[in-house]
Length: 201
Image 1: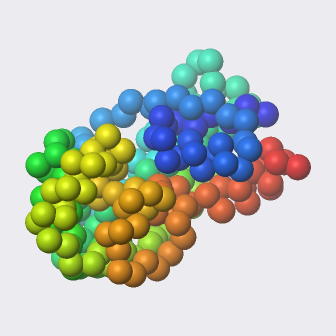
Image 2 (image 1 turned 90 degrees about the horizontal axis):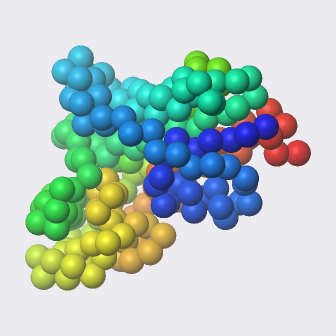
Image 3 (image 1 turned 60 degrees about the vertical axis):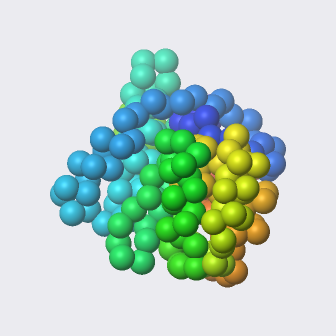
């Protein structure tokens, strides 16, 4: 049974690689920002936004002619970072914005909401959402600037501008939740479903 990851995210690929799954990674190329803005205008919750983004990725690939056959599973996953005031942060456009984002998070608690959706034959058949609560330690402007300069290549595609599996751990005083969720996918729930479908046996 083929499995397609509708993402080229290095963190999501690393998670699947580390458990030995055979899969193909394929960028879905959806307009994430347009979907987020549309859903925010509709007053959708952060949970629903993460879920809809994951679903859009999975369906984009699953509805292509080459991948819409029965038995081909397409896994879409996405993540939303929500601040305590209910607002969101997106991926940074440049180093300056990354530094601003970390400054906003410094000394505060935020939530990472990670969603996963499986699609088969062009329709969603399974979904899961998990939430991690992240408390960043107070950070000086000099520390933030050096952190961004030293790690820009790795963090430029990350909402929140950190990779918890690397130097990003330095930024945090407290973390509540799964490391997999923090990395961008509720992996244990995905594994449960793959066992259920006998993709893993």
